[in-house]
Length: 447
Ligand SMILES: [Zn+2]
Image (tube, protein in one colour):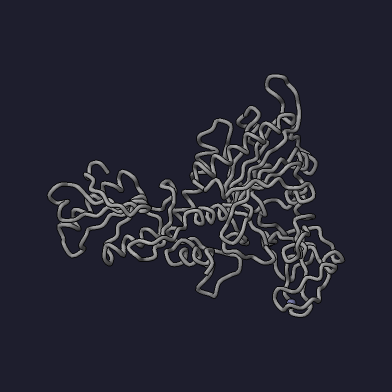
């Protein structure tokens, strides 16, 4: 098994992540978070919000609707350009993203260029390709009461899309925030929420899924200050990923995206790449989007998107720098970073070395023996005390103590607290450390 398979298996075994709709045989490109996954995901998202929004004076939050006026996607260019090159194998009818099965080509590869590469079908091994067709990745849906026998024009008019990115929900609220909060430039609008992409071939666990959560900031700046603000946000990303989330510095690599590979709106993009178990992949992006979005909105809506400088009176459309991160990608990076196998007492051990601020539980409390009422009662007392103090504490009295330790190691609980007969005498407990497996006696009052 690869390390990714090990992580997928741990996620399922311990209730972090399950395949979506699993009871019905699954649903490609969707994943459900179980009890521990929810806690970890929420801690990651809360850490981001705390770091980028709550601890700063220049950031504001928004939470826009997922269904937006279709004009949003016309203005942003998504209706025309949010498309992947789809190619079909004429032998076995499998469909692929051409740029994902051929080396050295990007999304704008033409049919002729692709055919010239003589790629073999990853499924059947033959080489018999149809033409490349552009496949728009937005999920379309109908809004309002539309019946199958309604005329085509009415059906067309009712089409809306599940948002393919959260960013546009921020841009469409830029003017609302400027008019109500009068923020000085530079300032950022932050949002966390779901985004949807109809990936042709979802794969790599939660790395390439059809429904994901994003955490994005649009940072509005005076046009001639974009470079210094880009650098400021660049170093903030490193601080967040390395200090707050605790990712290994050597696993993160910056990739300066070449002009021909950048999104249509970007004048500069750095991808922050992470060494995932199955290869180095994008973890987050930092893009200079110029005034592309606000100017498009101004053009399509006829509303003025200009900003008036409070001191100089200068009037201009702000430029934007966007740090954007996928929650699931970060979630997997955190797990990959923490997943460790070692040997304890000649036995293989799996341990998630999660940073304390992200571990689903900070402590696990248990009585040495579950059939001794006096131990259970004392352990409950300690459990209530720690829960009142720290919140995220779990209780475990199943199996023997060794099994409990292994389980807590696997879910990343930093400390196990065990109440034994000595506790009843001296008010001290055994505290066992996840990473070193060392055990020390500690007074209950010092926990
Ligand atoms: Zn084939």
